[in-house]
Length: 412
Ligand SMILES: Cc1cc2nc3c(=O)[nH]c(=O)nc-3n(C[C@H](O)[C@H](O)[C@H](O)COP(=O)(O)OP(=O)(O)OC[C@H]3O[C@@H](n4cnc5c(N)ncnc54)[C@H](O)[C@@H]3O)c2cc1C
Image 1 (cartoon, rainbow, N blue to C red):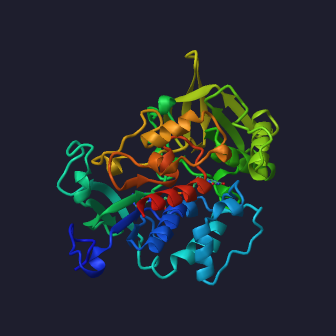
Image 2: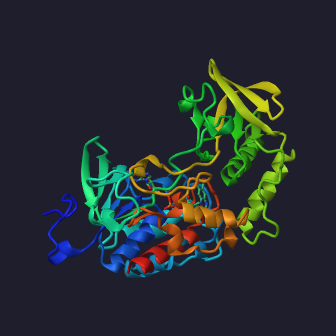
Image 3: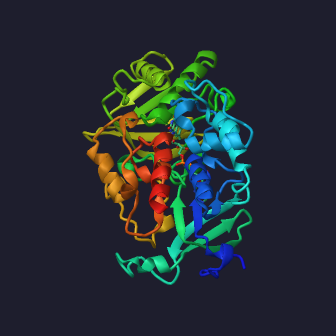
């Protein structure tokens, strides 16, 4: 009997093992899978992309600002030894996303016990509890007796259900980018223009023909927008007429720079980006204190109406739009579960409160908040990784490794 397709498989022999489902084969999903393997769970990992690490591969051309020593967990290092591919790198150097996948993630997914558990082209559509709804059996342990019911969709569109006793949602935020319009909601016209708005960092110089010689609206102020601004300014040096109108919601042009930043990669990025908003490149014009009010296609161009806080409006015309305004995890996935979300950040409440208590602390100074902060009223359901931080964009991989330690420590 396949224990994943029966809500209550027989408890004899291997059937007695608890079924642990990891949603998403990103770095944190991988670390959780390694921990589950070591803890003797029956394991299944669902990944929507055709190969693991779908999100990291999509931004694989970007260099991380944290060094190798922070980007690989102790479980991953052990796994690489076991795979006969110990990590030999300059620990202080920063890998690109592709290097992280090639050197660490791909070899680990080939390990026995992980390889068989991984189901790619398998999107998790929704997770509920068998025979019960969100508002039922509140706050008691009774929900534990009802397995999770997971609706899956294969690459061919086929749908089916599997069951699990523990679910770790590691689906990240990258796949759910925020929209461009003021107030975090789409601007009028934005949804119709969706296929003309790019929401990921361009791969330059490979996409030179796409961006070179164009007038580009770049929206966002975080590290992704800063990375894109730096790359586009370099492109403009070799392709004249490349022009970037860099839209920043805030009047503050400090771009979140950390004083005496100990991470050289991040320090250099914010230094260069700050210079760019202050006019260091003739190709880049900063438009601070403005938001997108409306979008309208005009032939191959887009007319963008901008608004200032005092209500004043202005209109610009651009060839391309690059919206790098962050993202938040897919909360619809667990809408039938008793997840207590923070009304401000959408992260799980206890963790969100701990993070908000830390104020605007730099991500490097964040401390782990313990297994208690990761638990929520729904027993045996945890949000881990980037998604656990909700709208807070200070998540670091290193925190993900700590979360996995804490959750598995608490489940032993
Ligand atoms: C450009 C960029 C640079 C970054 N640089 C750094 C850095 O330098 N240092 C650092 O510590 N952090 C960095 N981060 C932040 C963070 O560490 C990464 O986003 C990291 O990839 C988060 O890992 P994760 O496993 O939580 O989620 P993800 O890597 O987002 O993985 C989620 C996985 O779930 C899959 N998935 C999504 N939805 C579903 C579904 N419904 N069903 C099945 N599978 C699904 C995805 O395909 C993906 O493989 C960066 C982020 C970005 C975007």
